[in-house]
Length: 119
Image 1 (tube, one colour):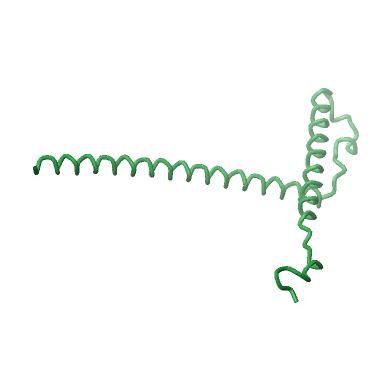
Image 2 (cartoon, rainbow, N blue to C red):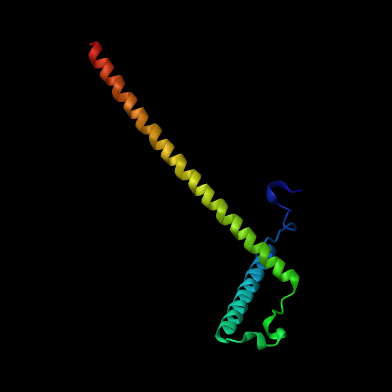
């Protein structure tokens, strides 16, 4: 019987596996970027880089890892855009709420003036 959580100790969910996979992908992405930066720097330093062997200029990453890197970049880009949109929306809401507050204050002032003239 699972009354008040007793007897449910078998059912533990580990949510760290996805986090660990994401961290590994991020590390792979950083390593790939470092390799690309170093290879691009090396090719810029050599004026005649077309004499280099093609094996030295190509990266040794497989297509699945490069697709993962592209997916991670796309997801980071989407998150960044979403965060920017949310920030813009909150700023607009704050501005509108400030405008409403100021309008309420003006209405209260007008109501006071109208009550004073009636007396």
